[in-house]
Amino acid sequence: MYSHYDGRQIDMVNSRDDYDVVIIGAGHNGLVCAYYLAEKGLKVRVLESRHVVGGAAVTEEFHPGFRNSVAAYTVSLLNPGVIQDMALESYGLKIIERPADNFLPLDNNQYLLLSGDLSRRQRAFARFSQKDAAALPRYQRQLDKVAAVLRSLVLKPPPDINGGLRSLGRALSLGWKVHSVDVETQRDLLDFFSISAADYLDRYFESEAVKALFRFDSIVGNYASPYSPGSAYVLLHHVFGEVNGKKGAWGHAMGGMGAITQAMAKACESCHVEISLESPVTQVLVENGRTCGVALEDGRHISASCVASNINPLLLYQKLIDAAELPEAFLERISHWKCASGTFRMNVALSELPDFTCLPGREPALHHSAGIIMAPSLDYMDQAYLDACAGGWSKQPVVEMLIPSTLDDTLAPAGRHVASLFCQHFAPELPDKQSWDEVKDVVADHIIDHVTTFAPNFREAVLGRMVLSPLDLERKFGLVGGDIFHGALSLNQLFSARPMLGYAQYRGPVRGLYMCGSGTHPGGGVTGAPGHNAAKQILRTVRK
Image 1 (cartoon, helix red, strand yellow):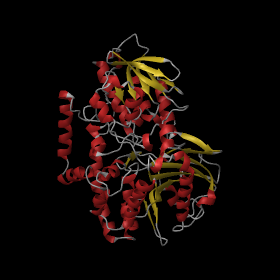
Image 2 (cartoon, one colour; image 1 turned 30 degrees about the horizontal axis):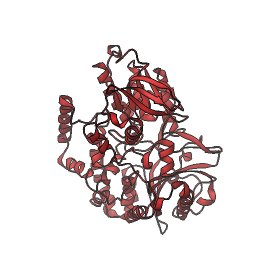
Image 3 (cartoon, rainbow, N blue to C red; image 1 turned 180 degrees about the horizontal axis):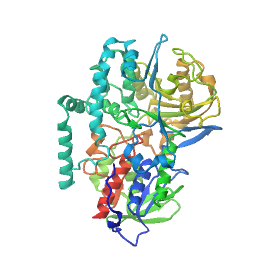
Image 4 (cartoon, rainbow, N blue to C red; image 1 turned 90 degrees about the vertical axis):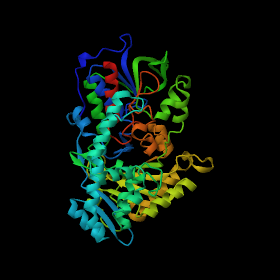
């Protein structure tokens, strides 16, 4: 929960400025940051380049009568403290848990469907391996322990090497927290940051189907093989969320992901935050080594004592700030900020539900409400990555399909459906100087053909589609290289090193400049945590 103090104690940084804080980008973290600042009495303005708030968490009509969460598409990591503090439910937000977690269609009319309580999951595993069924409780227990450690750190700034006694105190607190858990959990925590998802899951399971079901999380937004060191952490990153108090669950926001950010915008407006749409920022203004506002594309200047950026660190430091205002060593380091998640996103309007060969039926069933993973083995995922490295995209891509209209009938006409296709391992930059604009429709057809091998009616059921290549995701939402996390979740880009050592506490290298987006701790996903944490740091500075 957010730690409150009396807003009347705050002295404005500079009374001549129009705003105390200007925030670049009305994505969910920008809105969260704005709310916490304005709630304490600061005058805040949010500047958004698009025609709608929400960043990548938006709901749009992409085919006549069909609406969907066109980029971010499912809920788990949104912090419950943020939901409560902003009273998002009072502004119309309703999140429901998915009835089933995952559905893995396989060859030979086999499938793995994960849903229900532990005993039901064990019965599903036992169809493939009795050993795996017996190992599941221990796996979940250990994963929950490690996830609990990380969950406790989400709303806390990480220690900073230049942070003095306060950061030393945070480091000691962190050390005590890790020391307080059992040794086995400490070992697992270390392993998650360094080993591959394959290595970790091999300790528990033997069935390829079971391992594939879990390993998918290790390559989501991660342009790497599940054999790659560090991929175990990406797996972990996807399991420390919760839905309506249920740890590790995944859910759906009624009305799509835009319902989250629309509720956040209403909460901001209740605190008198000014939100300006179609107002792209072209420069962060610096005077005498301190930010003094921003310049907009239309030539206007907005004065402010502080500027907080909700965009990718690469865009901030390479596009919006004069290089002469930044330390040379900082510029060199940020130029190596790794952004490339290899993501290809599609939204499709369907005349009917997919009829899977392994589990036939066109009427809504439990498996239609799950995350449908079309990647049947570890080697399959590895080969998809190798193909993308060699030729730009996978011959047999990794696809997760969600059909949110099975839970939310506001998204499609009666009897029709919408599906999200989240596709992994598509090179951010194609070989031989090809452009994604030239090949994206060919690749989209390829993906639809691939899904049709699992559900033979799929191609004929497609009424319309929205295709977002890695380049489209960058242009539309500012996701550099299609990176959904605003920067890879690798060991050298996590915690006190996000975005780099010395700048982990949401402050930039220019006085009055802050970062509140997913390029800071705890990283990507629709969490609200970076926005919350950045606001705390800004408020602490302003109070001083």
